[in-house]
Image (cartoon, rainbow over all chains, first blue to last red; front, side, top):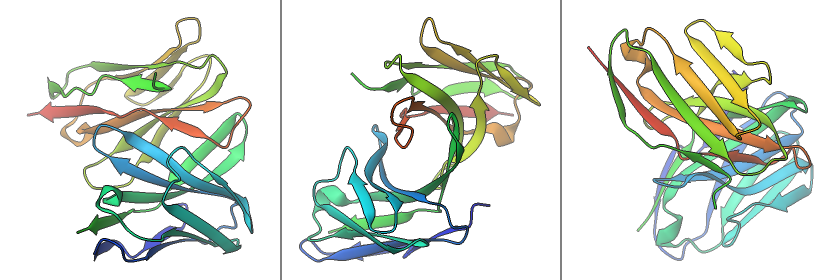
Length: 114
Length: 111
């Protein structure tokens, strides 16, 4: 158990509203990630963080922003939600030393934008 | 071209059968390889890392073929509880913070 929680676990929101998803970890991991998972696409990286206030974009970052003000929390914000952002969002941490670098996932947040 | 490609399946096999999945990757700089298992509506969970020499964990065997750029997962004596989607994941030598996921192969083990 990598000690990762996500909140909320489910959310329904309307198009145009801002939404923030939270990822919390208890084991002081440096690297944290946000992915989305959609049928036929697998997991796609949105943003990742390599330390407090240090973040970088992934392959599908448009429409999303992130913040990490504490080691344990990584927030994902949809500034103005769209229906195309309906998805399952997973937070992850990585641990180990390259090349034995493994990822562990939180339980996911199911977001529906109507 | 996708970084990682998998046959989506589904693979429908009877209990006790042996089943194998392959996964191909496009970047020769890939250095770390993993198989994850994902149950319906759950998070992916690490099944095993794949080492150059191949590795075995109980009924599961993973192999790496760098020359042909694929990894494989063999499941022997399939159980009903093995029914899940299996994700292939690779990580690059020069960017170990980015993991590339296949879309997954679905396995259904039938009684």
